[in-house]
Length: 280
Image (tube, rainbow, N blue to C red):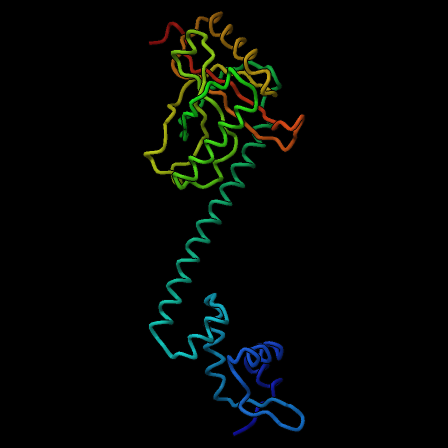
């Protein structure tokens, strides 16, 4: 039987000589013969079968250590077990990549909205389609405090997202809610923080649905301006004789990678669902 040099064996199997030397070192496949005088390695054509199996297992994503273990034990059930474990790992990786892609899409969308938003202080009427939110009650009225309490509320939101096994792509652009009853009394009270989510990634039992509606909105480029701008939009609602139909949302359109005084940069959209007094 013809002796195959390491170079010929590598060429026949479309791999490098370096790979064959690594497999030899790991005892995955050793030369059929080694010349004691010059150290030259020689292989048999029959060894291509074992090499094919090694390359096949490697193409399935198996580690060389697992391949060696499998070949050493000649255990078919072990082979199936390793493949099933690898299949589950791939499923998890695909899911994580889907989350990552959605996170990129959401971030791009938020910056596009930021770029196309009206200037700070602009009051507009907008029809907004149905939305889905994930919401928690942090148990503290952040209007009675500063930005530090908002950050504490976000920590509680993050903890709840984790405990509910939700992807962390949603831990961004977190807004706050003021319920309609407090809004109508002009009582500044909000202990709830929310993020908008996608139905396909979040259990429906965890979702609060916001119906499509017409909103009186004002755009705001600073957390510190919210109270003033909320007052302005409420004045507009009164002047236009609108009827408030739902809860006030302070939506963060974009979390900006700009930090002044160690505070997060945010562009906000304050919104109140309304209808004209003559509407049914």
